[in-house]
Structures are given as structure tokens and as C-alpha cells.
Image 1 (cartoon, rainbow, N blue to C red):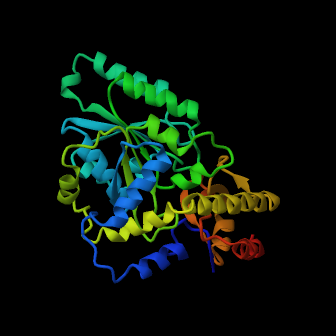
Image 2 (spheres, rainbow, N blue to C red):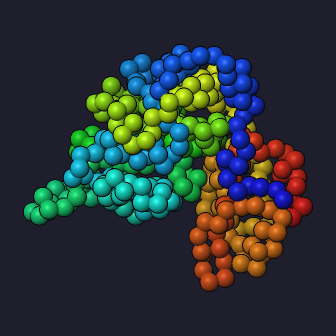
Image 3 (cartoon, helix red, strand yellow):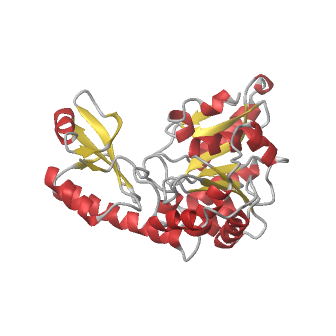
Length: 341
């Protein structure tokens, strides 16, 4: 059985595991106070061209979204997100669990539009009853989105400007950020994101780490006592070294981008293979996630030999499924897949 089910089906990049093994017996301070966390933070600051950034390491994406959003928002505020956004759909109500409403807006190809955000916020404040409503207190976007699509620098700048106009923070979910930065069709860099967003995170779990996400507050704007807030929410790892060593490794010798570019190369080969075999794409994705439309009988037959992800129903007889490449995808994987397509 060959798997293209997700980008975290394998454990960790060999260099990450090597460093974890090499440092295993070192006695190190806990809770992110070790030298590896400090080195990783400095390397991330440099990569972001953001010397005043504050970096925190958390274990997973849902946990990171929940901790950041609930720590930044006041208790009367909610977070604007696309209806297809991860916090809107696939996080089990984690944001609502903290008492904050997800204010869902329709997007296009997984992306929010700056004008729609501006209109939503302006309409809210123009409503004479807005004191009885949930205030929009943050904008959440994913890059790449849940459909593998990307914001252009122009789109990201427009959304950032709207947020600054209304004095609310822009939070970018970067669970798959490496694959977005490595895309051949992007004009957005890591320093661009650091400049335009108030907080974002660099995904490790899906991009070569065993686990871990690096949260970056870009403008010396981390919530007061954020470490305490992490602890209150069960997100402060005692053995913080586990995260620091991994990110220190990923941001040494450009490994993070190297393995991300590999995934994009494999995705382009996958896309070509699917097109050659006549498969129909749901939308065009320039990143590592590819979405195709299968007849239900065709899907059942393919699933006997290939693992992929159910995404959503297309109609009564067809289903949208996702194929994902990653840092661990090989040319042999693609050759094996070709046998079953």
C-alpha cells in the first residue's frame, strides 16, 4: 500500500532524528530555556529579517491556533476566518472551546478577500446593536490554505492594511508554510510574512519535524505573560529541548527550505502524472496538496492500493480527494502510484 494521505505520514527527517539522538544525554534546562531553543529562536529571527521577533515553540497546529487566538483576543471578541479555514472546520471546535467565536466569511479557493474583511468589520461597527454582538478582534488566514492555494504579496498586503486600518491583528497559520515558500508560483517570502503579519507560525510537524510549531510575534507584541498563558492551556512542554533541537536543525544550512522544495518537486511530478492519466482536478494548487475528483466506484477501487484523504463530496456520484507530497516523498513512491492509477 502506497500512501499520499498527508504530509506527516512519516516520522521526522533523518537529520532531525540524528540531532535528537546526539543531544539526548545532554542535561538541559526545561520549558524552552535551553540553549537549543535560544539558538533556534535566533536563527528564525534572522530568517525572518525580524530582529525584535519573539519566538515560542509549541507541539501541534490545533494547539497553537487555540493558544494564540485565545491569548490575543479579549473575552468579548471572535476571530474572522474563511468558511473553509482550519479553525472553522477541522479543529473540533477548539477555538469555541475557549469561549471565542469563529466569524466565518465566504472565501474564494480557500482565501479571504481584503474588501470582504473590510466590509464585515465596517458593517459591524455601523450596526447600532454591535455592543450586543461578538466583536471581530482578529483575522486568521492560512498560507497555504486548506486547498493548497497561496496568497500573493499584493493580497497579503491588502489584508494587512485592512487589519491595521481597524487596529486588529493578522494571524497567519503556517502549518505548511515551507511548502508555500518553496512553491514556484509564489512571490511571498518569509520576511514579507514577518513584515505584514502580527503573528504567524512556522509549521514543523508537516515539514520534517517529529512534532512542533514555531510561533513568531513579529513586532514585540506578544501578549503579556504568554509563557504563563501557554502553561494554563497545557501547551508548555517541560522538555522544550525536543522542539528547540528540531527547529535549530531545520534552520541550519537551509534544511527547512531544502526539504520543502523537494516536496514541491514531487508535487509537480504528481500533478503531471495525474494529468497524463486523465484525472480531473478540483482546483489548481501550486503547493504540495493536490485535489482531484473521482467517481465513487473509481475511488473505492483506487483505495485498495493507494492511501489518500477524503476531502468532501462533489455530488452524489463523485468525491473530492486529496493527494499530498512531503519531504519524505520519493520518486519510487510516484512510480508505485503510477501502477495503480
